[in-house]
Length: 209
Ligand SMILES: [Ca+2]
Image 1 (tube, rainbow, N blue to C red):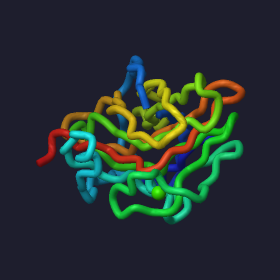
Image 2: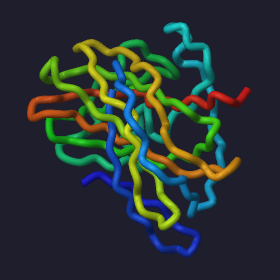
Image 3: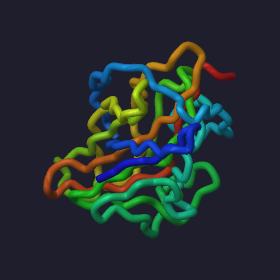
């Protein structure tokens, strides 16, 4: 069962359940509710332009541990999901030597990332390592006002067997005013023989300059 934990100001721990996904995204409706920020997190991300080779010159922030070069710290891996040898083949950012393998029946939830409403999209690199017809589901997880985990479907990804960047995946989460909140990304191969690899999870602060 994938989940992420979020330390609350009270010192209690809120356990969050989440999902995940990858390349041609099918938009999906978002769950209702506004993301809460029990940890009073603040947005402080280093920006880069990893998708320039694909005509996307926007700034992006790497999700925590999103390049899998230091294990998968803070990520929640279920089933046989595991960091594996081999980077996405474009070596964006500082490159690397590892990615995340998501065999059939597995799932991964990213470490929490503090964002606000200026972050509408995210992109990852993905390849289909299983049934060519099997998709991967991607969701964004957040905490509602009662600190219960809610999910917003970002889409269902299909891709071939070589590494490719996904299209922009929607962060369908509402934020309170100018407020920030922790979110997480969940990647879940679909079907009994759906298997995927992902690498370099980047989030787009669209409104920031
Ligand atoms: Ca990597």
